[in-house]
Length: 431
Image (cartoon, rainbow, N blue to C red; front, side, top):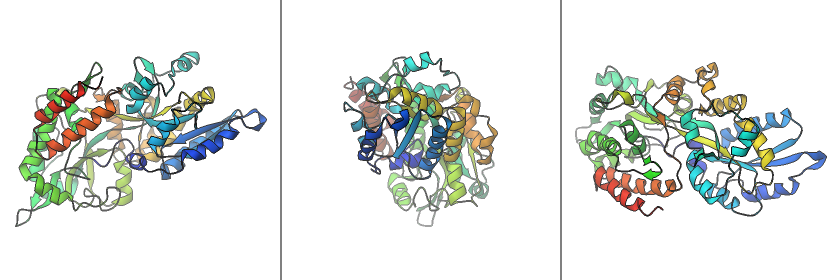
């Protein structure tokens, strides 16, 4: 139901590819206390390409705004190298970015600094950050990261295909959604799929985490994994019953095997092979670049018919900044971090990326009106039903186990109840 990865998909895709290595950062460290009394701050970031260019503009403005700190940015999308550099006695960088999902594990390992003392000393106001964005930045009641660019998802639909199928309006409830999926699915004379009402843009599966919460589920409760929450199971069952069982996993896999690249004009949603897809707020800019003639709309992910209180439920994933515990200039890193998450810098950066701002005061900013249908995503972030999966130390292993379960669910080798029961059993050993 969504493209590869999550949270600035373009950045996520590049994370496993080593670019400018941390060796380059280490070379910079020799000049970390530069001449003239200025401190040179080493900023390693995961963004690449156009996103890196947007970030470098922010860095340049900061450097011009004051005379005490010079920030040297280096694009390094290798997250494993990032973590390795954080475990040494002398850090290779002073500040970096990652995802809110990393907070719990890194705080527990002691490789990132708590920001509480800085926040208290400067009376730094956290009240303007959205609750769902800040939730993943905290661990054991302490703040370890601050958010800047936020991702969430909604249901994109092809207006032309809707009209051809006689579907009058996009679905609001899950019963309407299931009906629309059926009407929008096409087969040829041999029964082979030629158009699918709903699937992932890069595979047969779904975003089961999102479907869980839109059905009232929770993936953690008081720090403990809860894969067997009834809402989680109901969300997976919706997709299995409406898509996988109805059209057959073998035929769906044959069909999706012919999909083009996600970030290209051959994206199956752009090509009309998928009538609906759940995807993120970056898609409006992708569509503008790759499929400018596409007639499309976007609505919140539908909610169960008997649970209207779940309207506008969405999962939030924040991109964040942190100071490693081995930073050689943590005080200066904090000063730079404050600038990075300021309104001006956040607006400039998130608009360039077509990502959401983490500040409530920016959700109504007219600067975002130039991005088609972006207001829907801003509205979802402001919703009382915007939520995030808690950043617990077990999250990485839990996510891996859930991915295994998701694959079994999609392939019909286990029911959602059976697959998530296996995860619940495995979770007992997380510690």
